[in-house]
Amino acid sequence: MPALGQVLLDALKTHGAGEIFGIPGDFVLPFCRMIEDSATLPFYTLSHEPAVGFAADAAARFHGGLSVAVVTWGAGALNLVNATAGAYAERVPLVVISGAPGLHERASGWQLHHMARTLDTQMRIFTEITCAQANLLDPSAAAAEIARVLRAAREYSLPVYLELPRDLVTAGAASVTPLPPRRADPEALAECAGEILARLAAAKQPVMLVDVELRRYGVERAAAALARRLGLPVVTTFMGRGLLSQGPDVIAGTYLGAAGQPAITRLVEDSDTPLLLGVILSDTNFAVSERKIDMRRAILATNREVRIGHHVYPDVPLADLLDALLARAAPAQRAGQQFPPPRYAHGLAADAAPLTPSDIACAVNDLFAAHGPMPIACDMGDCLFTAMEIANSRLVAPGYYAGMGYGVPAGLGVAVATGERPLILVGDGAFQMTGFELGNCRRYGWDPIVIVFNNASWEMLRVFQPESRFNDLDDWGFARLAEALGGRGMRATTRAELAAALAEAHATRGRFCLVEAMLPRGTTSDTLARFVAGFKAARLRLANDG
Ligand SMILES: Cc1ncc(Cc2csc(CCOP(=O)(O)OP(=O)(O)O)c2C)c(N)n1
Ligand SMILES: [Mg+2]
Image (cartoon, rainbow, N blue to C red; front, side, top):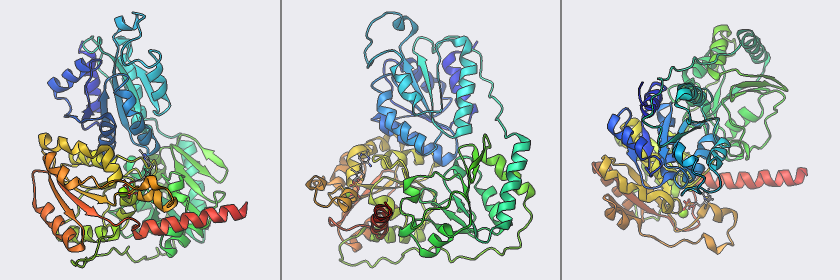
């Protein structure tokens, strides 16, 4: 029989995993040796487990399948909790594999090193932030357990957790046979599709609102085809920006409520039948709504269920639903509305004016126009709002979970998943958290372009609480630090210097290039300014409505 560790690696590959990120430790050394020796999947080690999780998360998002984080028990795995929680919140199929004490150690009765409370504490913690789990204590049951857990990761597009005792990695185990995907009940699906199409046909102002699950389940083309067939305008949520990029004819814009384009806000909020596909009903998507979407009239298909008004069709995969709708939808009489394509700033004046975040967006738009777009990994902070002003669709960011520190490691994950050169957007505060992972670029040949929005401030907090002095950070001089980490660093304080630094960075290959954009404290992107105004107005309305 093959070794359990190899069975697991083969199963990960069969289920679509593209790579493994990890940090070894004594409880996982035997498995890491097998990963390295077998080369079943490429293996990348980073410097801190949060980065391992963020890189794997971003890789999974970009190649639309599983990605894997391998860590040691206790100190390593518990360092991964926040990234796993973020993956859960944003529907990412991250496979967390933790080495664990061997069977003989479990029976010793000792308080083992790396153990916080009990032998099962870690499993309990990860059970809260994953959709399926297994402790592979019994090699004879391992194949069935691995098949069950990996199918759940793919079906729910959510993280899963596997624990692997270190003395069982070479134990004999049966190979894994992938379980068949569970489809929707045909009758329920037919009834659900029929009801949705009837409601859309009777609607005066239907709209399709789309979000991240369309990408997670690979159904963007089907959604665009349905929109064309039914003459529905398509709007993406804040988190879903960049979806259906291959269907620009159906995309009307991005819904940002009071912070967005009024025509798009009206399209969504005045609709009598909003069709929400793969939409996460989060505050980041809807907190700045001018008027709440009337959920009594809405059709919400997410998380393998369809909610119409106040009744629910359970266990309906999004792909099955779209297939059923396309199989039944007659071309609508309604002529699809034409919307002007979103406008993005170009032609940055290369002058001595100090920088604003929106200047960075303009400079990136100029770079992409001259050399083609790059895949973008973005952190939390004003850089994320600035990214809304960049004409690019392929972007990963913690748009809903909003955890800082994601950007740089995610950019490394994007480099692995795409084989392309990524652009990383990150604030100085977030860079302080995980920016040093750039020190891993040289040994793997990664050469991202990194733009650090350096305002020496937690500016996003300052816009909400300007009186707090703790938002004042020091200037760490990141451009100089870049050289020490094996990259190239350039500091830009004017628009001319920014344009020159980006051109220089683009022309430099084989090492990461960090452009430190110096931003005066108090300046924010146009989008963040609108978002804050919209958020405050929405909060005022809530207070007045009581
Ligand atoms: C892991 C984590 N800890 C704290 C916070 C809370 C926070 C949200 S935004 C922010 C400031 C970000 O500063 P940065 O310099 O990166 O960007 P900018 O605002 O543009 O200046 C903080 C501390 C979050 N979201 N995640
Ligand atoms: Mg900052």
